[in-house]
Image (cartoon, rainbow over all chains, first blue to last red; front, side):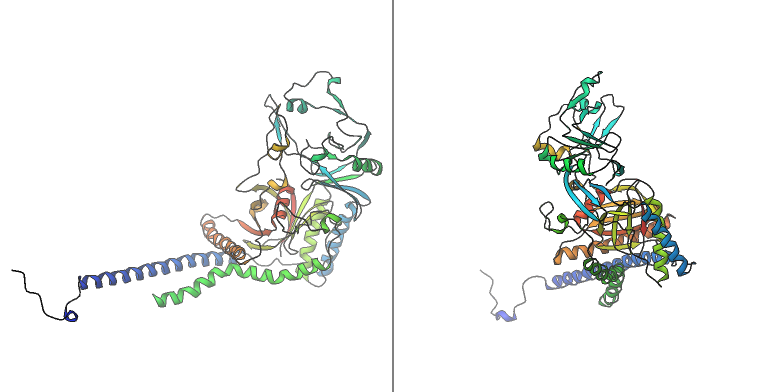
Length: 237
Length: 265
């Protein structure tokens, strides 16, 4: 015989599931969250304290402002003397500036840019000597140089690296090193075997593709050859 | 917990914002030199006057990389004794370097610019967007670049003997300014570490990232200060934000061993 069903209304019946257990879980979750928040707050406080201590130490270790013992007139005089010293070595008249990053050459006359030329500078590549004893670095040299020589229809005396680069052995005879027509119509020597010269690869002007020399297009090179005297300073950066 | 948070939050905010206070002051002062620069532009050749695109970006190159007019610096301000002292020190240090046939750099935090110079003439002039400094007070005077470091150091391509050069592979065979990093460290003499970072683009998120990057630098320096104090050593750090193209140009122009002058604010 089946058990007799309760006749009590639904509202009076107890809720299904263990109510006390659910309440305990909720309380535990809240407690856990509180502990987590407290730990985060303590961590943040500790971190902020450390950072603050670092800031305080750095500020206290910065030191006082330097004591100026000279008077204004002396300082002004010192500054002017240094300024005169700088102005004495500053380039005047016509000079050349080469920007190796932009591959630009500027012929300047004092403050005025007389001519801006698109050039090609050193590739920055390296070539190791087959013997392993040395390595060539193809950078355009930085710093101050001077136009030391000027040549029309220059010939290229190929150095050792030019042969190694082509996978060849450098020849013994001087005549075998002479190559004509590759340096363009003119060349301006700036010392240590570096030249401002022409190129067959005009499509590569504006790129860093050379072995250290500065390659220039035909028209610009002719202008420079005709207008730049020997002794003109060249600033490369 | 609520009470603790109420106490902690303002304290944390104050401490976290402390490194940014200097930045805010600099940004306030930034408008004056920039206005002066805009009012009196240096003589530029034609290619600088025209807007130019760099590597697909439309960021205007603010680096006055074209040769600027010969300059030994602005006239010393009259009456301001610390400024006069700083200026005379800078000029004296620069006068020494200008006697040599080499390029040198002037890191002028007072004028917010870096210049690569030769014989007193500006070859490359780069405006500094943002700076921060941490450490013992800087004094104006000579310095030198000891090392350049970056996460991705540009490597020199090695030539393979006998290899034919093709236009398609040209980029792999040469090193150009576009290969230079925009974020790097310059280790100067006397333990000064110059951290160069690229400027952020306009917009909320890039600017927020820029601010967070600056705070992170401040927090890192604070924690490093504690560590260094325990180890009885000291480093000084300079935070320098430049336009990306200018940062590359500077990396290209500075070589290890180059001498220079540093001018603090």
